[in-house]
Length: 433
Ligand SMILES: [Zn+2]
Image (cartoon, rainbow, N blue to C red; front, side, top):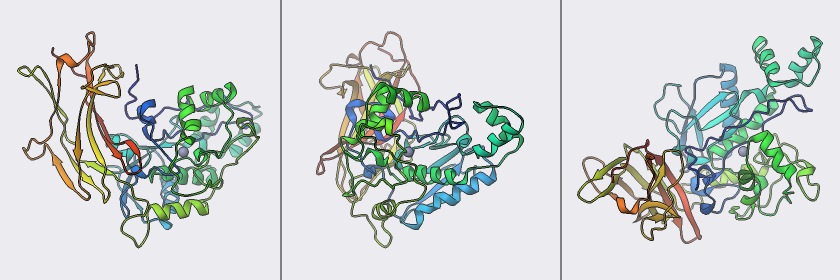
């Protein structure tokens, strides 16, 4: 059975024990693309950018901070995020914490690692959830705080609790260089960029227990997640015609023991020439649409997803309500309602008809014209119904059911299938039979 990882903010184990460098520093734990749903069967291509989750060129993204984070830190985040706007036609407008709608929501906190939704995947998260995490512990000026501990005759190894205590007593000593690097990296994800080390064939990864253990201990990633986030992504790729860019801000640092040929990479602290060129190509200034544009649909104003039991037809009637907008390219769009149990597993089925990738589901294919705007189940109009008969829903042994609604797009021309455009779930409900 497959776990539905609802709103895939992956919690990071923040490395409770200090390492040789005194305090572990977080690498980026951004779940890329459809990993958010932890579905091995739906891996599409990916690349240095995920062009299916780019924002419209010229968008001003509304950004707010979730509760927490000092003004000093917030100012730094805003300053360094804007580095990208110098090179691409995309801007960030930071709005009040009370704003009811934003595209990007930043949480400055402890224990969540550094990560971000990739581009428009932030729409899969609710407005009261963050789309980007920064772990401010990893921004501490560790040298400064270690010196303070040493001055008290406290010897290493140190743990994070000692660091936290020192930061509380004497706040705002930050590693500015690291903070700037991480902010630019995560906002790169928010614009749709992916990890550069996943460029096909760029890194000869060693796939040994020690590598898996490293990611388990530093990131809390199991083998499957390491395969996906670090290794597998490099096999299928969409690179926008770029060459591998070892200087990219989107590159992880790599130690020699992780590669078969001893290749190493240190952290990059600046946007590379490649980064600037790519963001300028994805979000061109002085041009309406990027030459790299692929089909996309935008789902907005998602209202309540109505799920009703119909006693006469003996089945579930699902009527989601939303607005759909397409861009200048044509793709094939599927509205899919999949069923999962309340404990987070998709319900498996062998039904030939009510089946989406082995999951009990109902779906409808829609032809969407370029630059179209369509409203579904809005203003009293009923124009989208997904119906699944009870006898097509496998036994759940008393467990409640969650309806997982998704919009997928097939870019047939480029042979890129199952691009997830939207994702929303209901609360668990009892299923009449
Ligand atoms: Zn990252």
